[in-house]
Length: 408
Ligand code: NIG
Ligand code: FE
Image (cartoon, rainbow, N blue to C red; front, side, top):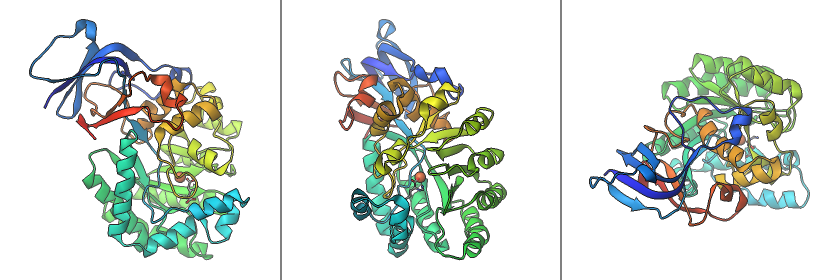
């Protein structure tokens, strides 16, 4: 059914098709129409405009929004949404003073998640992932990336990716799958695991078409830049573009290498030397910050202001995972960006909607109110505006979410 939403207080993020990612000062602007209408047809945005020029048409079902705002749904470009169990016991260890690495050495961390995931049957994993994805959509996420990386054996990595493939079937939002077999070494024998990644996992993932991207946790104690390069080179062979975890705790050269491999994005960047800002500026690789992880682990925040003030684009994602960021709430990400990274509400919103779509190569489908894009949008509660998204931290400003023009 065709729908027309009328008396929209503010229609946020109105953009023309085929525009470019927002860099630098352009991120401070969210084009909007005050007192607007919006038409949807076949699940897509058909048209929009100002109520001053509205013409009634009885072939549309009318929904009068009485001054409430409409915003495009968030695009969450970095999550680890498939996992077997929470790691709240590690959270308590952390409160008592243990560090991320220390917890990992005590049997916690990524290997803890891997052990549990290996033991968990497909159906149980899928049921948990579905519950979380439903909750993320209800919280305003309308497109998402999901990584493997808690399997760390060929069978378990494939199982995780098959769960993501099933989510793609069962949900009507765009979902991108990323292969993160290189998340941690499950054995002391690093060469052996590298061979498993390169010789076993990648060919199988390719033949089953289970991934869109390849990822690697490039960090001291995890994968070094040489190992990352071997993986990204193999990724080229299997038609998987890189989106990588780099510079979470240390800058060990991963950014430069990722750029050389034409990475779509480099994610984390809590540690970001000026020289790497310059490298990113001259590239098409998108910097992605994960403020939920910085907040939860009490580590530095990605220098968002420095990134923007140097004329770069910025994307922010939830990094939803049981170890370092157990929240998928993209409104919270907007709040953290404003409060801890000193981003304007407009910059945070652009980083989680319009720009974020580019980090998943979904810029023609989601991220803004644009003719022909999916009718994935949020109706705000009465009285809420763009500022509310970051201002009302921990408080739900969302009244309803529409996916493909249907209420969730
Ligand atoms: O993005 N840094 C690596 N991976 C995840 C955390 C994984 C975990 O602790 O389970 C991240 O923060
Ligand atoms: Fe992550």
